Image 1 (spheres, rainbow, N blue to C red):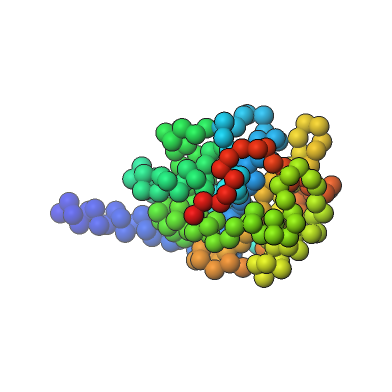
Image 2 (image 1 turned 45 degrees about the vertical axis):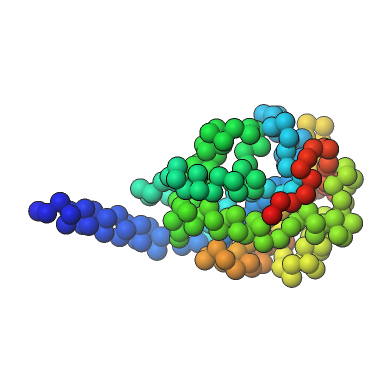
Length: 231
């Protein structure tokens, strides 16, 4: 057979396998987890880079299935190429950093793992996965929303319901939040989760849950710069 014909046949089979897999394992929405870097550094003992951002950064971007199992590590021959990472280098380092290192080469492991773990289960190619995650992150300035409502990153604690209501009032949509504790039992606002439709472009309601927030969470400030959300 002609080599070009064999290549086309192979690609067709790969796409058919992908379509069959996704049809058997659909997801209902996408979840974007945005973390507060100071809380991460206070609750994780693996260390942080010397200067951490003072704005919310991406923790993960993943498909979710209502009432179903988590979708992770789906079979796909598609990988996150170095060229896609290089194209989005500036935004990835700013908005989706590996908080344990400021080394770009080392950070590539994070983004490749995120694609392999979550992106592989999405109805999108790797470049779209990265761009949609970044676009959704940049849609709202979460720190400004909280600060405008008097919820300031100054080490004080704030009622969980107040945090959730603030986002609901400003965004017109429900979010979910996650709290984490340090070894001393202090509870911190760790993540804000936003939901979008399966296309990755339209914000939708989340469950309005507060996971791990048994006490009013602390919104910590560690005095690092930069303080403003870059655009």
